[in-house]
Image 1 (tube, one colour):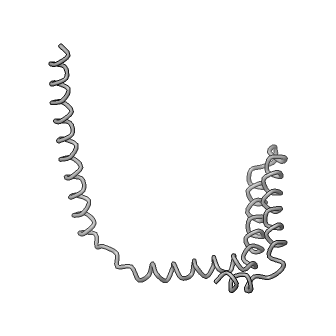
Image 2 (cartoon, rainbow, N blue to C red):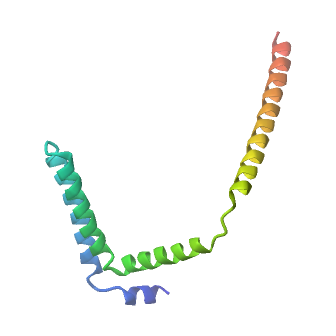
Image 3 (cartoon, rainbow, N blue to C red):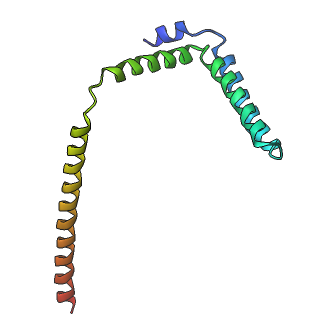
Length: 122
C-alpha cells in the first residue's frame, strides 16, 4: 500500500509543500508587518494567499487524496437517515430527565455523606 501511495505522488510534491508553507509564512509575516493597514485589505490578501496555497496543496498526491476523501464523506452523509423533529425532541427530553434524576441522586448522596461525616467529626 505504501508503494502505491509513493508511486502516485510526483517528485515535485516536496517542492509544492514547501511553496504552501512559504505562502502561509508570507501571510503570517505580512499580516503582522501591515498591522496598521486596513483590516479589509489584510483579510483579502490572506484569503488570496489561502486560495493559492490550497490550490497548490491540491496539486499534490496527498491533496488529491484529501479531496477524494472529502467527496466520499459528502456521499456518506447523504446516506445517513436523520431523525425526525419528534424523535429529536423525545430523545432530548429523555436525556434531560435522566440528567435531572442522576443529579438529584448525587445531590442526595452528597448530602447524606456530608451529614454522616459532620456527625462523625463532631
